[in-house]
Image (cartoon, rainbow, N blue to C red; front, side, top):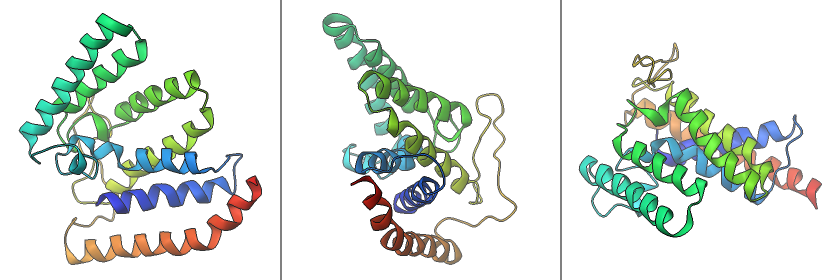
Length: 204
């Protein structure tokens, strides 16, 4: 799916769930959800995030960039800061560099737990714990949404490389796929315009 479709699904479900569970919906929470909604595609060189980071949109550039970034962060942190959080970021940066899109870390339960733990650690240290749940919703909805595509996701990676799919799937980029994604985005826009202003007024 496209980045904007994933973003729409993640944010829409966060808004819906905030009405039924004890979850404070703020601009920061929605931004955390939006980030997590597109984060699993960070191992794809042409993903929404990498469009603004990588000078060349290919696998070699992606691998080189994130692998090098992880090594640089590790050594700078070792010499100047010695922060545990920076070491974790460097570790995950290397993993992103080595991960293959839809065949590796980011599209799995293991990847979900890793990134939520990393985000959660920062949330606890810097006192924004209320963003952990929206972040988790955004990430898990990305995985669920991709299970509706014919590519599926290796949800049990690295223990199993089998790709899991829903009973109904569609091909990304096909006319039916584009129609479904457009319908999802339109539904999100209508729902957000209808409910979000009412929800946010509760926190004023």
